Length: 285
Image (cartoon, one colour):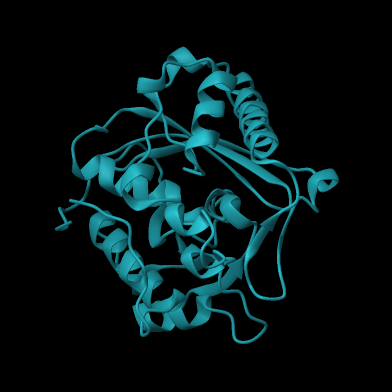
């Protein structure tokens, strides 16, 4: 059983990231000491100094890895995966950990509708440069985009709450249109169609965003999977958290082709196409 979570007073971004990272490392059968890089996506608790990633790497025991944080709002995890993918093209590096850790509940104005949908969560992937086919999944390709014309549509107020400057319906349509555009370019470049994709797992957003995505992609609603109804919107952690839940339940199986896409205030958009692999070892949910 999964449910929406709220971080306690002693559960910060780093603490949540470490838990998710350890699960990912165990499932991949990788020791933290063998990591070359740790990339942490987070925007809900950003601060000037110190960043979170170095502390996460230290707590994991990733002694030879360099580590850094990135933002990109709700698209942060996919931007982190894309960054790691390009890093691993360099023969100097072999393994990278990408973790998203968010406390979106802290960005909802008390008494607003945001308190009904926002939750806290963290999720992680281990990426490895491999010489051939192995038991793990494969990142086929990715697509990134940004549009500064929409940079001002969302902001954090001086009180720390998320404020949207456009109507919710307009925001949903913009999100769906951006996801359709980056996904379309990604599929076209790889000479694939949505019919070649087993599942679409997008950033959960809101129920309105999900409905708009179904219309924009023109795919049956049953092929778009999220766990939004249970955990709420956990921002950049949405995709890895959903994958963890869906794989554990057997809904997603080895060999499935997955398209994941996300948008983030800024305005960012990202999509990744990948296959699901076998787990190196089981980890209790």
